[in-house]
Amino acid sequence: MASLAPPATDRLTIVVVGHVDHGKSTLLGRLYADTGSLPDGKLERVQAICRQQGKAFEYAFLFDAFLEEQEQGITIDSARTFFSWQGRQYIIIDAPGHKEFLKNMVSGAARAEAALLVIDAAEGVQEQSRRHGQLLALVGVQQVAVVVNKMDLVGYSHDRFASIVDEYSAFLRQLGVTPERFVPASASLGDNVADRSDHMPWYDGPTVLETLALFRGEGGKEDRPLRFPVQDVYKFDARRIIAGRVAAGRVGVGDRLVFSPSNKSAAVRTIEEFNIEPQPDAIGAGRSIGFTLDEQIFIERGEIATHVEASPLVSTELRCNLFWLGAKPLEKGREYVLRLATQEVPAEVLEVHRVIDAGDLTAATGAVELVEKNQVADVTVRTRAAIAFDLYRDFEVTGRFVLVDDYDVAGGGIITSLVADEHARLRDEARTRELAWVKGQIGLDDRATNYGHRAALVVLQGTDGEASLRLGAALERMLVSEGRHAYLLDGENLRRGLDADLRESDEAERVRRFGEVARLLLDTGLIVVATLAATSGELEAVRTLVQPAPMLIAQVGAPSDAADLTLESRDEAEVVDRVLGELRRRDLLADPIGSRQRYRYAGTYAI
Image 1 (spheres, helix red, strand yellow):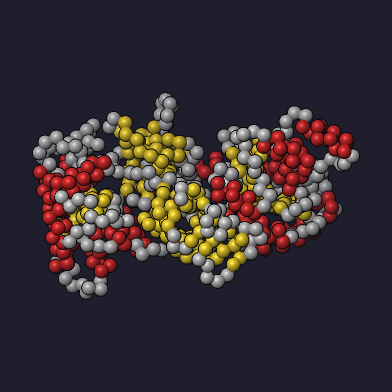
Image 2 (cartoon, helix red, strand yellow):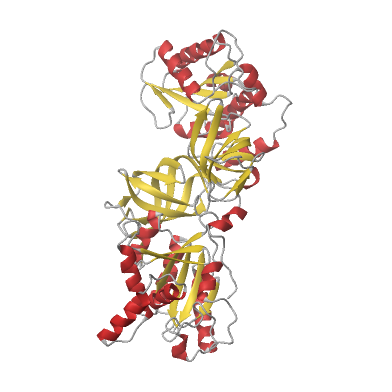
């Protein structure tokens, strides 16, 4: 048999589903036997037991014995078995019911990357066969192959095989699932399982084992666009090392990256891999690495690094299939924590469109406010802050998430579509403007080197206009006295000038103009101190417009969900000290050495 196996480092998680008695266990038992994956003597012992008990040997007994053997290992999940063939390790999810399958999918550790659907050639497509297809569509398994088993019972009939292919393909198309191939087989006799069958000369496609090898594993992810969720940022001497795991694609020295959702951009200066000499120039999918950038931009855990031409989606709203396993029902409007890749943000279910019971896959209709345990729901989720993501069909790692309720993972989901939120237009406008912006010869790095600080927007909130101006003026005065380039931008000044033509109802346009003015000032390298009375939604709009420049919202007085920094005291000195401390924590200011001192470190600004 020609080798179709991928590199030895490849692994693939597969779920095998099928109607009861359609031969799933027999197929798996035959695969384990024919690939030499059984412990020494296991086949002979099972055959001997069958003889002693006076019953015919079945390959399904091998699978049951193999599962029992692996369950004794403390590191093996009882829902999984595994075998290896030609360098690839196959992890098989054995979930006897829909609820168990959902649990494995949500857990992440046993998430299926591909599926084998087993159909009895004699019985044909059954209701459970349809439900399994629906389940695979719900959980977003993209790679599916169908094994038409027990072909020996229908005399290896090509017509019978073709009729099942036509019927089941038409059904799966309605669900948006396209099988990669149909394989006629007889698991009990070994036809087209590991070896090609002489009984079906009309079939020239791959065997079941070759079909598994043709499924795309992690090794194939290097050819896809880059996805690098930032795990952490480490500081070593003058270096800031961005650490994480390459989920897809490749990253190399000199590559220009954009970080989403912040829209910040820089080029890779070096790649840092632990205990490797010499350091590589490029790294592909599946490797955990760190890299440094040619600009000292402020990056936090949760950002997703990509190449500029293939960035992810960004929004505060997304449509998804959500699988709920929590002890308490999922409530519409209640706050949970959404974790996607390395991002973590408060979120709520905005709308429940449909609920499906995982036991029988029946759908509930009408207005729904709760999602009970072991139900699947088609919902719209809204996050408190913008997040970066992909549709699950495009990227698995950045297209799935979990919801946390009271510190416990209570559910998981796959993203099926983006929902344009209220800032979608501004977000597109900001990104388009950033790409088309005609820049001068003095870049932000040059300004940061000379000024001793990065450009940043500080918005003071929570006080009346006069108090905000007083605090803003005190912060501006301290920054300038330390040699910083700062400017106080009062929102009321814009109302009297640029916004004089606007009606009171044109608040969205007023906010847009404020954001654009702030962006112009930031492009000169200034620290802009703004006094602006705005709602949390309006502040998010400003943040969207000024990206990739960092924005710090300092809330004075009562706490606010929109605030980055909460200040209980209104004392000028304390407010100024706390804001300056936060700017330094974000690496936006060098530590002051003396009045009007310019700070340099290894050719760039100090951090």
